[in-house]
Length: 393
Ligand SMILES: [Zn+2]
Image (cartoon, rainbow, N blue to C red; front, side):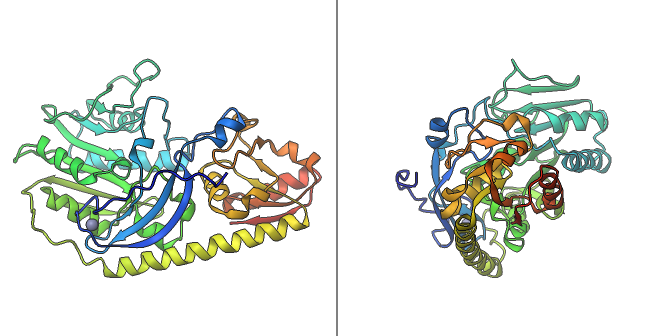
């Protein structure tokens, strides 16, 4: 399974500042390209597209990027589904953002434009918060299957050269990190605004500082080509001529956002000193390497004692099964979502079973992917008459 590697390609320069200086953070030879996509057959799961995760940190601007990414593997299509809007906590957070933007920037009865709106959840929230129309641009949009709220329209095309007349805001959430050239999108946004435009630009991305400080390895996915911290994002916006009026972290620190207005491009603006962040990123890489090696030893020990089940077949589970060398010893992968039962994990090829299936399998140990659910899972196992060792990440 680990034998074939994708063709070796390497970015010569930082995708944000174009500098050639970068130091290694972590390197996984083979990870699934889409960690959230499950397969109907084991052969398809084993043959799922893989790529190299070769993260480095730029010593000039401090962005983390996958130096060996093959962006041709990331051909987004209408089949691609990456909505985060399935969790109540996330919904509440995004609704709060929509309401705050409408009240802070007087967007009631104006139009807003979103770049990469997916299925339009955030535009719906903006309409519910009082804007006249929510207009999205997304090449992956499928008009045949989308069900949109009144007032929301999505064009299956790239963002236009000029902002639609009268729009009061341009928003782009969780898009920049998917692009091989994030600076280009910032320039495109700026060039769509007139010099005296009153529109606000709202950007939101995962926060690289959170990933480093929390050692959130399982949130590192191939689909994310870059990881940005607040100072670097703000600098990139200013350089592109977007004057930052506010920025911060949100959603338990996991996300980073900023708000900006049309300004003058500052092509020669020096990036903020990345040295402390570069050092922290390298340390993160070392911690991750030890974590992987410790988990591999632990899985070997546990499987010597009896069959091991991994509980959770989301992107955390997929990453764990593809990054930890001894994951091949895992007997079962279980998920409470009935829609996942009988489907297969990309890369490792494990078939997903339901909790009830474990009782027949003589499972000695369960490794829980999301520690939040540990107690709930232990109770469920007890209800099945099982008393395996329960271990969480
Ligand atoms: Zn750079």
